[in-house]
Amino acid sequence: MTSVLRVEGGHPLIGTITVRGAKNFVPKAMVAALLGDTPSELRNVPLIRDVDVVSDLLGLHGVHVDFDQSRGVMCLEPTNVELARRSDIDALGGASRIPILFCGPLLHRLGEAFIPELGGCNIGGRPIDFHLEILRKFGANVEKRPDGIHISRPAEGLRGTVVDLPFPSVGATEQTLLTAVRAEGNTTLRGAAVEPEIMDLINVLQKMGAIIAVDTDRTIRVEGVDHLQGYRHTSLPDRIEAASWASAALATGGDIHVLGAHQPDMTTFLNTFRKVGGAFDIDSEGIRFYHPGGELKSIALETAVHPGFMTDWQQPLVVALTQASGLSIVHETVYENRFGFTKALRKMGAKIQVYKECLGSTPCRFGQRNFLHSAVISGPTPLHAADITVPDLRGGFSHLIAALAAEGTSNVAGIDVISRGYEHFLTKLRQLDARVEYSESVRA
Ligand code: UD1
Image (tube, rainbow, N blue to C red):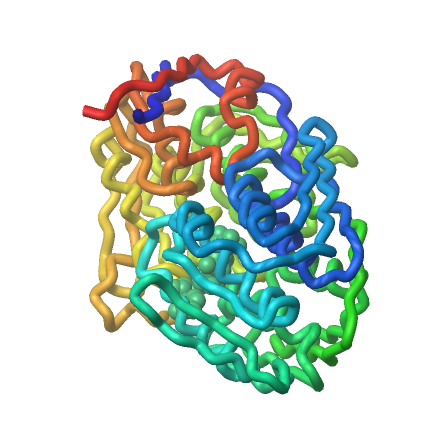
């Protein structure tokens, strides 16, 4: 079966929606609960598929997860952690990248862990070499076998270490934190990622009893402790979802009040949104994003790790840039293959060229390696309807925005991918007066 959204485009999105907890934080906080001797309570949990996958994985490992979906409150009881059956883990493999973060906590609790084939968005090679190297540095035995990667703890336990990341990877930083907090001795992590979601994970770990210091130069220092307890925490809001709806407002000439959007985590996005010609008002409940009328302006943009312009903000914004006057340049420096979604936009009338060269002020890791990682968008170009297929989570949301902005009726196939990271997106579209019809059909 494939899910299809029929979208009658050309109408501005207008109305109010709410964003809840961050997809890039909540599943990690759920994994952190494994480290506690007592239950944890997480609030502002969104109803998205990544949360379901991690709930199921925790359940397989003996954690009792009780999720009150309407209130967004999740209780996690980790006192009976046990080894999961390999076949059960495999059944969930391929659905998300979070299983790799179970390693440190499981090594501490049970002495072994298993990594199935990982999922997540198809936006490049998405290797796990940093993760495996980090686990080895803590003393773990890492063995690649045909059925997956087996990891075990040495008899003397995991020991603190020094990690130098070659790139400030979000996942590798989280891997280090989740392993270091209960390793024996001190850990120094240099070249760490410092995304707001990571800072909130540090908040959670500190509530649990961890000792973690963040220096100004991307160095994180962890003093290992013997025991951690459960936590009570409210997730930070999803700044990617908020920015996605902001781009949807701009591309459709609309006006969306995003309740829950949080200015401090979005400073860089808001600057760019304003430079493109978008307007926003910030109040105590959230941020109202709107197209103030007049022309949108072209910009030059580079994605980067925090506090730079987030890579996940790029794809939705590119749709709005097709409506800006002049040439916009986007240099993607985090993932080597994040412009696949532009193919569908070209089919809909956008003028977008992708290049192997670094079209930005700073040459990046991908410049010499033949990756199509820069884009030039020439606008404004009216978009027309087309039948398109969602490639990945953020690219899929861009397709959705393009269909909403385009004249005519588009069919967007594989739309369910969006529920991996966007809570109740169909309900929200209806709250914004979008003319959409959802159906499921047998794949041709
Ligand atoms: C997380 C986010 C994702 C976001 C990304 C960067 C989650 C669930 N996902 O992904 O939405 O786009 O951060 O902000 O939180 N790399 C390696 N080897 C590794 C690990 C990473 O080479 O072992 C490379 C990746 O290929 C990529 C770069 O490092 O080029 C950044 O990846 P990373 O920050 O680790 O992304 P994720 O944690 O997977």
